[in-house]
Amino acid sequence: MLRRGSAAAVLLCALLVAAAVSTDARRIGTTPRRRLAAAAPAPSGGCTAPGGGDPKWIDPDTAGDLCSIQLCTSDYETCTGAAPPTTTMQLVFSDEFEQEGRSFGVEANDSRWTADNLWYEGTQDFENYRSEQINTTGGAAVITLEKKQSWAYVQRYNGEVWNVTKDYTSGFMSSWNKFCFTGGYIEAGLWFPGDDYISGFWPAFWLMGNLARPGYMMSTSGMWPYSYDACGGDKSGTEKEGANKPQKITACADPPGFNRTLYGLRPGQGRGAPEIDMVEMKVPPSIDETTGQPIPYGLERGGLPGQHPAAFNSMTLQSGPLLPNGTTWMSVNNTDEHGPLGPGMYLPQGPMQPGGALEGMYTHSTYWTGEFAYGMVPQLREAQAQLGFDEGNFQEMLMNIRPGNLVQDLLSVMATLTEKFYQEYHKFGVDWKSNEYVRWYIDGQLVYEVNKEAMRGQSNGTYETFERLIPVEPMMVILNFAISV
Image (cartoon, rainbow, N blue to C red; front, side, top):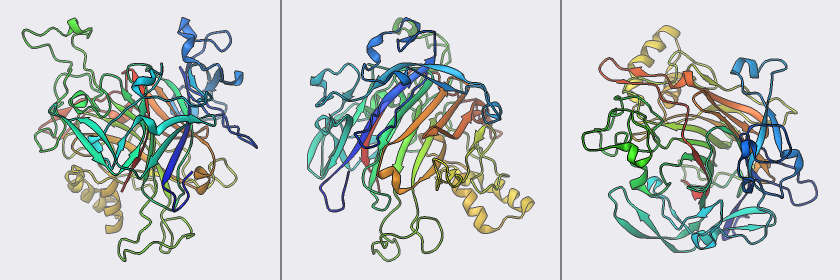
């Protein structure tokens, strides 16, 4: 854990995937067991790989009570109703990280993970990633961020390879080209670094389509974050400087002289590398932007005057191509206190009830005024005239109505975090059903859903983009620890 004034901070993790995923959060009095796991609909039998799968993916240290989990996989109304039906999900992957001293660099030849030596140009990171910053200690995968100079390579969008020097060094590991899955429940137990006051840490737990390699920019160009299987409509916004490239593998017919089947690809099928973020943790600035002075430590958390804004976790589905300018998946007529969610989006918890597992947590659509938000102003002004909300509400809506930027649209919410998330392990998971829904869970409670209705096609009258898919791509698993501003 980071203490103020120390030179390093650590993120502790463990993970499970099931054609459902499940994690054990028991930690009373001893080192907690934590795992990365995924699970799938379960056959009869014990803790074996379902469907004749390879048993090597299930860690023998995984407890027997985690061989399967019960989860509702029906529609939202059914799953949030009384006595919802459940599906048995069978464990297909787990990593307890119990073996002491594991390393994950290329030279370690780990069967599941690779820790990269990399500078992540896509987010212009302040740190380099080095493989030696990740190991297993005390039954956890430990990612250490330090203030020490290091170098790392980056493959740029044009194919150039640069050697980059940074003053901070941390870790990034993924299961790229080793383990991926298409649908199921995945969960990790995480102990966040630092506390809910000091800003600057940006740990993440996420999935990305395996057709691209994160951080290798030529591989992601025209691939990330596409989840699109229509011919045409993939060039919205691409004329702008800094925008994403059109989809590289489209649903259109191959041009003369090219045959995608030679590369194992199906003709007429659009492919890409979408992204699902289970965790992007951030703490708001601990410096008062108006005075430049530190915000007093120990203030009550909240959004009112005299309070310190709460730390939060962002949960996001990132997708391409971009919606046409002047369109959105959000709703200009929804003035709910949790944000202008549109059809197919749900925040079932709202303010968490006193005494519950997530007491003190509050969920809201993510504040991100993207480049195309201002194209929504005419519709917002019309809604303002009809509904009578004031200018403050108008500006609030503008900050939420079209999140994203020139390279991705996103559906995203934030959940506030209390200090306990920095003092012990908590579970973060996603239930993902291809072409149907993505559901985010924190400590076993459903906190957000996006279903296929949300990703409907849109037209601004002159340009049309067709529906985006709830990801159908095989997805890798990624854990990293960056620096934010």
